[in-house]
Length: 149
Image (cartoon, rainbow, N blue to C red; front, top):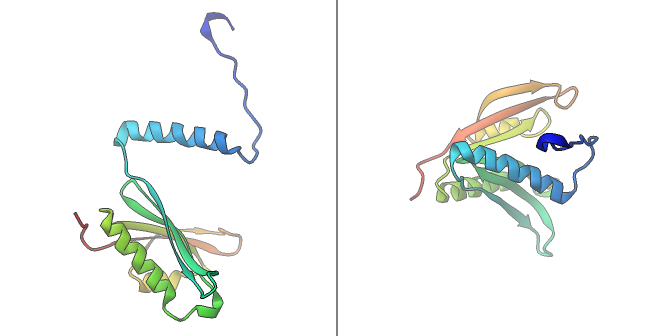
């Protein structure tokens, strides 16, 4: 191309290749950190396992921008009502504090665990009706304790 202009193409929406996804993520991180500076980031999880090592519950999250984002919490029906959800949530909150993170956010839906999170001290700051269709998604946050140094 003349005058140093590069030729570009726009791909169709498809599931990304791992390398393509990482290139996008790296570009976003570089842009964001040009404003925020380098940010601590860590994916974390905790699991409940039975005697045979089978996972019967767990919690997934990521610390980023000084917040813990809980991406999912699940406890198998067979052990629900045993306090395991509270134990998983508490363990993640304690871990977040150990990483100097005292802000937590998560999302749940009408048919999931809204009451559980509210009883655990989380506050709704937004909702999205018909996400999924016929249900509401809720966005919650919580400030926990004092950060550990």
